[in-house]
Length: 422
Image (cartoon, rainbow, N blue to C red; front, side, top):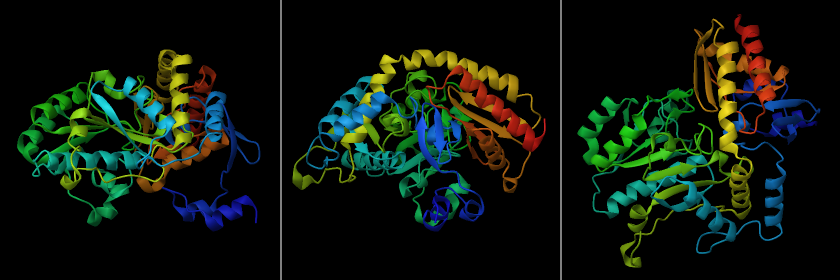
């Protein structure tokens, strides 16, 4: 069997209807350079979604490659359960140095879903250990997405992804992202709420839905007033995606718990963290017999190779002046979208914050698979995008060049026009 036949025979792909996958010719990536992926036949594709929102500085970046290789010469993995390791300590110090003020403790895991699970369990246990057991519920936004494990799905709110699992989930209160609705909900339910969880500024998997200006700042103030923890899920928005290192910065918000993953290792290795305040951390300290320990962990928690990649990535943010240079790229991308994409009659709306872009197309029924068909057209033009239903998502690496921005937008326009008409 060739690779395509082996793939069809053995691999079950995530978020993929395998009947359709098996009927088509699979795209199999063999290597990558810069902002391009290269398939087994040598064809090159601009990585327009950063390999599912994780790649930051481009592929095959020498500085990160070297850091991982150097760590391989020391140790590939050593548990954090009762031991420490050098890269996890050094990365934790660097993360605390750039995190919103007050976040002083780093709990490692290995994916965005697990970072959220950690935050939910910490918040729940924290309230019990401060003798507020009645504060055991969670508040989340409508159309929320926070991952695919059971706790993360419980606080999620997208029926397409989550409805089938409702019988497995715990009950969560929901609120639309408006200040008035949030204020009313907290007024009524704060006595029973452990925490509010939000993706700050942008709800990514919901189709790049933008929160109104000031919502996050109001959420922080209201949570503080009502003694409810604020969890900011920056898995998708962190590490420059919205134009600043963390989206929270844009409204001067410091959450009680913050979840990071995806870009933390620049797309090299699975890694995630949940950051917490000293006040929360301190509630877990005590004698054995009090059973205050946070009994949660992962085998690859704080993996040294992944942490080495994370350290190298943060060094590149500084040495390459990534965030400083990003502003002109954001302006160029947004201008090109307005010029080339917005005038197309089937483009309902272009939602954007920094390098997080959602192009909504309509009116089309879900079963028409318009987004998927346009993305297949993009492949023929040497660009990789992945849709969310009828929303085309653009989230290129922060290292994308001006010429590649133009290529990304021009190819997207051509594919939309091909499928939908001008």
